[in-house]
Image (cartoon, rainbow, N blue to C red; front, top):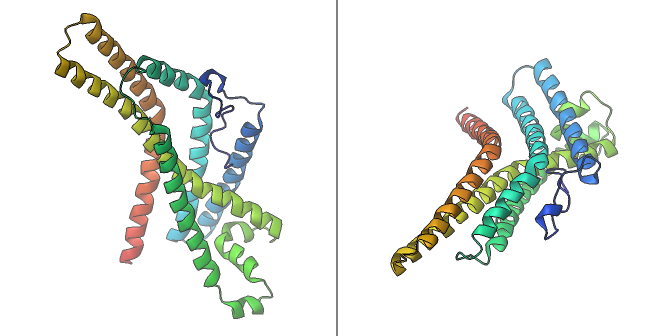
Length: 267
């Protein structure tokens, strides 16, 4: 829906059918999203360079740049996703007889739903606030509609250099909304992936406690746990390798806007 993470057959129950294809509508859509976000990033950078320095101009550029980097990173991750998924499935197969939390999938869905709903609610309120604060008398004097004025105020780095048109404004609005979702998605993705790996270690920990309490003396029992722990450690290593850049991007963007908000509150 938002042109991120172009992997096919994600709803198929067989993990080996999940793959990345260049000739796929998901891939074409992702490339379109990358190009659209790249255009917004370039225009916001040009406006920032041609104007006197203002923090909100830098905010717009960082916001677009962050969305562009997120798209590129997840596009690259989509290529490696089948390999990472196979390691996940191998680990799950080894741990199939371990204590398992049945509602794990529902918990992941709930995390995504709650965070996405909160994000869209916050974004909708911001849009409503900007729209309702538009001076109608001033808009009337400029012979514009209130909707046109909203788009001009919201995306000045576009309509200062191009002629206003409603189709273009709606397209930019859609791309910008997707960019807001990417910000939410990257944090949600980190949370879900981290929880998924941590839960595998939790399963092994529970199995260890069970073995200690029951005083298992079988060498095969403890050898099996050691083998499963080694495989889970390999999974953790591979996930860390692929999530490192994503975590750094998320941390950097969040840190910038937290500091920016603190600065705005002081001046």
